[in-house]
Image (cartoon, rainbow, N blue to C red; front, side):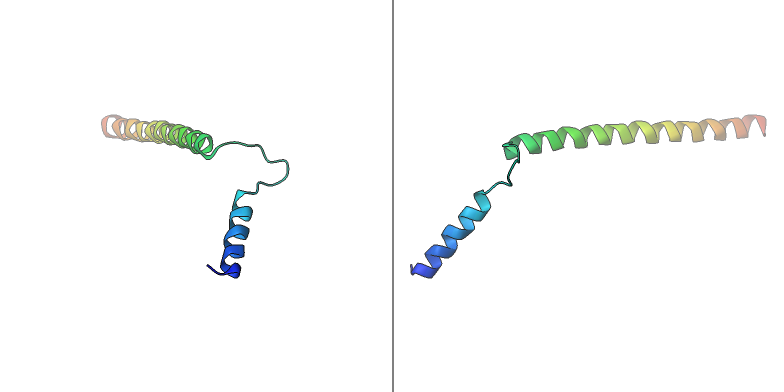
Length: 69
């Protein structure tokens, strides 16, 4: 390898390993696990909300068909 290629590799490793000043040292595994739990919670919340809206709509359709209001 020539010297220029070696210096580019060293530079790229240094820039990839640097963290911003004051950034917490959290591993990527912990971040991905936290994001996975948050995403799962949001999906569950959406299912509950849309289920509620669907049930309200179906109740209205039932009332419309039986009582003709």
